[in-house]
Length: 246
Image (cartoon, rainbow, N blue to C red; front, side, top):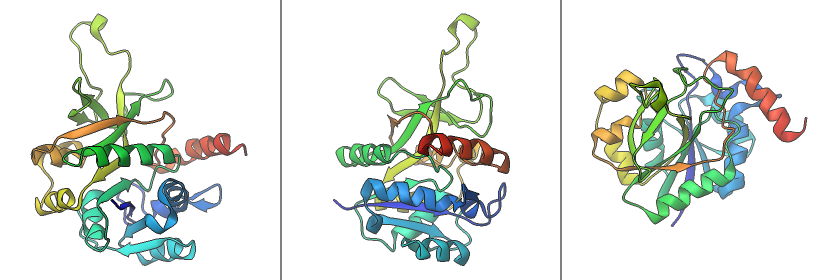
């Protein structure tokens, strides 16, 4: 089965316009993500789905394949679904363009989990670190059952508790690596709108719950950091320096 990584990269971000091209240690963020994805499955299997010719030119000049999508895609997964119609593959792996510390091994593991369970959507999670605040609304918290299936995902710190002695010791957070089939992506896009829970939380994977899809959550390596707003850049650059010994 052929696997393709598609990295959705929207220039017109409401919270951070031009985010895919923000320089991190002098290199556009989208290229950090593309290069790490290439380490996992080869550059020939990495595509960048974008609505903007500036992003397309940057990735093309670096040897990666842009796929042009519309400006009307509701979410990154809708953009992925558009791009997937132009790519021949059995498994489509969504790697977010704002996670320049993504671990190639996690990309492989989530692809393997999908290959072993083609009837479920696969997503990653890790644990909220001591340096992160579980009340931060930019960190989607993950609730799973004892079979590691997604029950719910929220911007608020879940699970809740009535008695402080029952408070969770740690919280799970979403890591934005997903794996889908083309049929699953098409069903997501054909829903035609954001679901009510998706709209409230601004978490697109919740649309799959509305579609009745089972979602398997796979634990990934710790250390994932995303650039959601400009204030995140300094911390991510510091982490990149540590990781690369700079």
